Length: 246
Image (cartoon, rainbow, N blue to C red; front, side):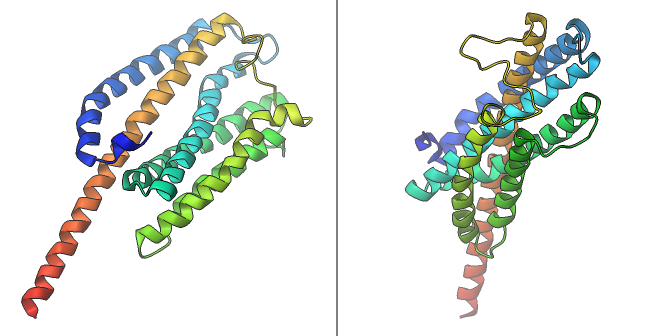
């Protein structure tokens, strides 16, 4: 999966062509999703206009879980096959995943207040999403906690892999336990149960968020590649100075 990432030059060559397409497609898709979601879709017969929070909340939740899976897979490739760019991919993904996790929690609270009468409940779905956010934060802190980055990368990768256990809990918590959170209305064996006028903007927003997250992650990886080159250059200059002194 990450073989094409093994060569930074190949990565840059491929992603240079992808980036403008990803950015343009994400902006168009998100704008269309917001238009259909805010102006063209009907209000819910029970929730009223508050249901429109769904068009940000649901894509954010999907991205938070999906990006953690990417983080964990990247960590596995780093631990097992020592792919250096897999580590960079993990480091580039974690802040974006944490942001979407936080956005999920915030929009969930905004949605929960009018529906449940409170900003927060220790609901199984909400609690497991909060734990996911903590895993992201833990990875970020641990990966930057050591003087040598390689030490932080190994420890953080192990933490990311352990956190995979939380993903099925997030997905199936509404089925396994009694919860205030509504069950899934998209990924069902008998098909989506959501109204078509609501389904279109929701799918557009999910696609748009995925494309935009991909763009930002690629940008982050490129930034970290530049940082590594600068660090290597500084180290080389320092070694040359030491050699000259001797």
